[in-house]
Image 1 (cartoon, rainbow, N blue to C red):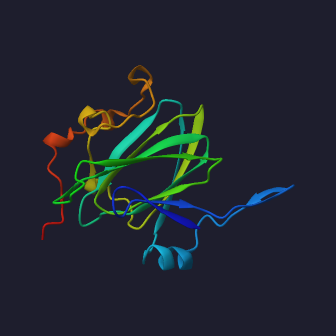
Image 2: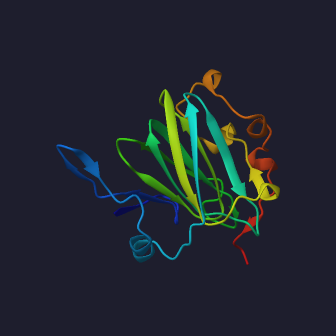
Length: 186
């Protein structure tokens, strides 16, 4: 796998080595050994999958301490615009984001460490999205910031008239109203 650094330290794009022939293709979607050699130690404990239609926007989510999560995300069918926003108080990139198009054709994955809010928008007719987490889901630790916060400067590539959000996601605070539980000034 090839590791591509982004403008924000810790957010990484992963491109697998794909073997193609007349039968189709093959690639390792995850190797614990290679991940730890190239990125660092991690212990994933839960895999999740969602299916969504065009215009669905999920996020921007995180889990509060002590149940923070790192995620390794990918799109196995269709296409999504995947985004991570730095919500670590004291970080030089606080409030900044990285956006990556993940598709069934490019097989890219996006690694999002603890301290980032995460979300995605479905760009194709439907999309199947999978991700690994290094902490179990804890509903009492749910947190989020508004996926439609214009001050974040995210071009979701979906007209706002077509955006489909859950009731929960419609009510997350804007970044300026947000009290981040992540502080790296210690």
